[in-house]
Image (tube, rainbow, N blue to C red; front, side, top):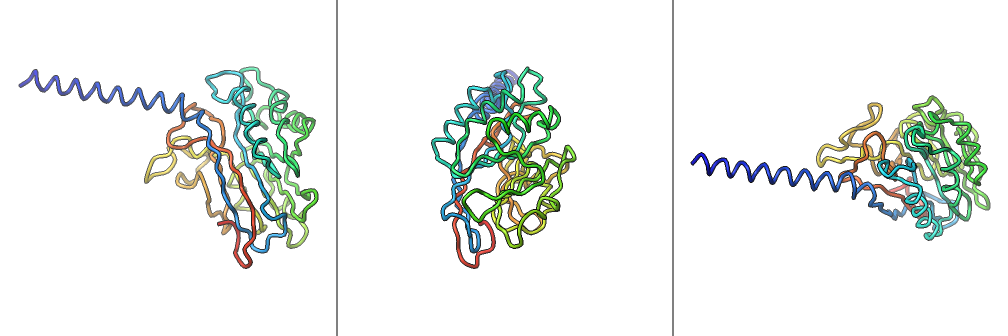
Length: 288
């Protein structure tokens, strides 16, 4: 009896250890590198931009040289190639381009050399994230700008050749966020593509019709069914870290991002870049 019970316990423990080992392989090696392309149609009431405008959102790259940090230069370059092959009209980059603070020797110029290869008909636009500011915000802005990327800090600029604007909001964690100042630069009734790093910035953003996207949360990197993210930054609700989230009465898409931070793991929360295709439906209020 005792021997039989010990054998059953041994088999059970062996099964648990095997399951944990497989989960570790999946979470540390496979899913963080299994990038999803998500295609999302968006309807904006009385859209005045080009019909079928294709807007790519790619955030939280956390680029590094070291394999253990997941987003190596080679992988980032491959993702740039995928995005370019999709022929976007606009590319929005909502921040956190570097892993950590560049402790492995990665520089803003290294990152800019990769992201500067992105191509879009109406341009590539970025806001900096907290990791970029912690590394060297002015240096990052200069490097990205020199690579042909328009870096926005609480400002609005017209999207060339269209009646749409691009609104870029600074990072909240590094005390750079001023949504009210940014929105004041828009003409009355203007429609905009709004990008921000921290979704909490949307709480102070006046009503702006169009598309609004945010980053920063990584979807928690680990998503637990019926619970939400294992973790969420700075008190953000754990069940509102990915996808369409209502913030202050407006829908904001929070992307899970491409890289990892703090811990190099993803489970049930794949990295992603998103292609939004914007059309119009008279009378419909905002993205659905």
